[in-house]
Image (cartoon, rainbow, N blue to C red):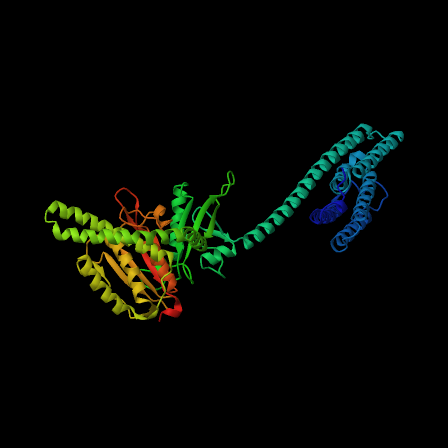
Length: 560
């Protein structure tokens, strides 16, 4: 098998040149050792003949230094340099071998050095040819000494040396060929991995969905630009832990829940505007973006790293805000004409039933009949409210935005709401609302807040401050109005369809309240979102307590 560097990769050729440099360095060491040996030997080589041993060894040292410099600075004609060095080695060792008395000198072992070098760096045929020359030389030298009737001539010893050299060359050459093959395979695999990584980077950078690679402890090891955009981290490196950033608490909590329960592979999260963590405010843990909030569909997938001793998980992020809006518009477009037609047709019979009920109430005196009339009236009012919602759903309400002082507006709304609902004045708290002005239709904002407060009253406790309304006005970001209660948070299943029309968990609801509230906010260039998180407290059954709040984010141009 040929191992010429010309047919190999650039990395393998570099390995051959380094090996040749190592061979030349070893030659310099051997030449120095021979000079030292000759300087201390009083009988051996000095008394063995008429050769100028010191001169030969000194010349060998000079040649070795020359070969070393050539291999270092003149990286051309590899085989010519290699064959020249091996020829020099064989010639010098042969001279010393003959001068030392042949096999009895013990210098035959020096042949292993050039032969091993040839086995590693030259083709097998050339290495075997050099071995054959050495073997024939030692056999010829032994036979010559035998013809001269020298008693120490040993043909058998020369033959054994030759056989050992052949075996050593074959083994070394096969091992070198295997190593070169492994190196070539490693280089090829490296090229393939590099190409694959380039393709992966290209795909990730152009993918519309966000992709984040995370470790077992939540350490982020990379992500694509779409993920940076969705998480509000544009221009920042993704090399932090999810748990170390309060801004990404919802994502970190969802990741931990998935690792504990792999069935929770898909969740829906709201990532909202960025807040400076240095602010001592209860809203600091709810922030994550520097622009408007977005709704994300998050999917967790575990990478197959079995047997590698390392865990890597991939988090896929999909911004479903536009998808949700498009789905709702398609749904409404399909039912728009039908709902409007039904609503108009139902209102006339409802008016007749309501009028007839009022007339009957003037003549009926019995409690049973009055209770039945009340049931009819309540259901007429409920159906009429549903009709009004459907009519409002089929046509967008026009906005008449005007400057609105939030503290005064909220104080008036609280007084009205407490009176209508019969609440303890301490239950709904709007204390500490900072002065702020927004451009919003007062009727629209009133309808939105009444809807949110009605839901809060349904689930909150009757304790003081169980329902809170407060303003978050952070420099550099949009003004927010928060509505929070101490009731249990909305479940993930309900959160996924929270703002969809006709989706409700109440037998008395139409499923249009929150949808209409969001539409009214959109008409006033604002945004209504629900934000959910897990608290540090733990329930008696071991589960974590959760809470949520509705957030109205006003447009920056509409607030000051």
